[in-house]
Image 1: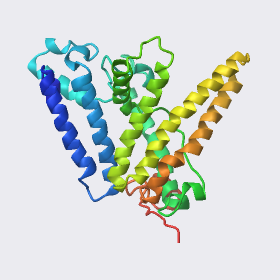
Image 2: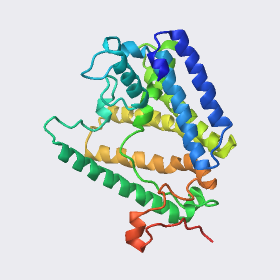
Image 3: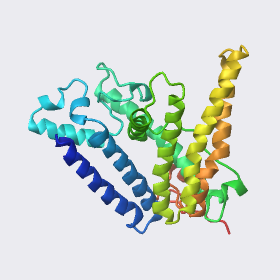
Image 4: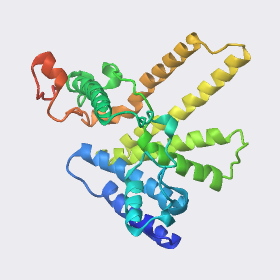
Length: 315
């Protein structure tokens, strides 16, 4: 937050170096004693470095970013500048900012929506997400394939579809990718290969973020290397998908419910096939030994009367 308040690019560079040094220490040398927490910290620290690159060095935040309906940085009072910096440094999805990916987020409530209706709707959405999350955690607690020593490859694959891409990663992935593609590699807007260069770069950077989290947890590069591989493979599949769509259009195949169904089946198929590349090291390391639910389960409570279930290992 301090770096956002500095007008000096030199100072912002120095602060970025400090951030890199501190976060790297937490990733490679510090531990909480809990591998799950180490994994989350590793991911968060790497994301923090990339976001700091964006806000402190790659862009002039004071000039380029402002809250919708508010004045720009240099027109704010010192107190409002502090609030501006605090909000920008923690609001990673850009809600209410001029750089928010509006189309990727749910529609903002209208002014006519009352507070009670808004709170009620959010509570229902939370309950739905919680139950879906609890179902997945229950499967991880009970399914043999998810236990240490088990394997998604050996015992089957279970996955739940998600609604959207990681919006919390979107900002620092796209900003760093565009910097490399457009400023370093000099790709112009009309370049046909620029979208694919940025596609592979964004998945490479995402893989690097997850590699760091994997290393912080496993303390061994072999498992994280497999985790990293999952992400460039997504870019390869998307490239293949684009080629198939282009061929289909040349053959005169038009968009319709059948092509959309095939598209959904295609996405489901390659996620099922490739997700074990990412999850296998975590499963073998016992990452899911206690599920993601912390000591309380509505699903198992209603199903088996176990409101505080333990992880069930295979014998």
